[in-house]
Image (cartoon, rainbow, N blue to C red):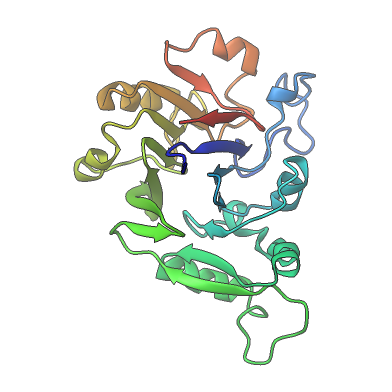
Length: 258
């Protein structure tokens, strides 16, 4: 019988620099707790039928190896910043293993960025062994990934449009500091919300902790997980003890089933 549940794997939960930050000796960066080590933000959604990765950041290869991923059916991009697209070249391994192009879902704006960043993938005369992709255009209406409905949610990352996504009762939003009321309606009723919370101090392009907590309360979300966390946030163990009920800091390798 086909399962209606999805499993979400947090491939990475860190900000653009990752944690620890190069050269930093703050308490978080020198922590011995593995939950304070954060690769660049990405998730994988799994069903019995498929695995879908949302964003291929600079740590994509490492994340795939750590999770022992043997099959990848699609990549969905939230936006074009380097910490979310820099690992695309490493889908070559799945091209070779699965003997087919990778289905890539992105807005036209993100597609243009990918074509600039990876011009060799899209060149007329392509070098042997380069990644093979099939581009699928995301607009603001729901779309299907191999039979799984995905609902785009338009958010703003300062002045940059970014897409969050709702799949069944799960909503994923990274790199945001503003969501319009009509887009919040798409989130309402989710059992689980994953939301950007960079640090405690206010930031120009990311929700801080207080703003993320307020959003969770406003939307009446049963369970929320914070991601895109910087070394300025605080140590996992210390901060978890202070968070309201129903809100947790996600960590790399965490798996949840909804």
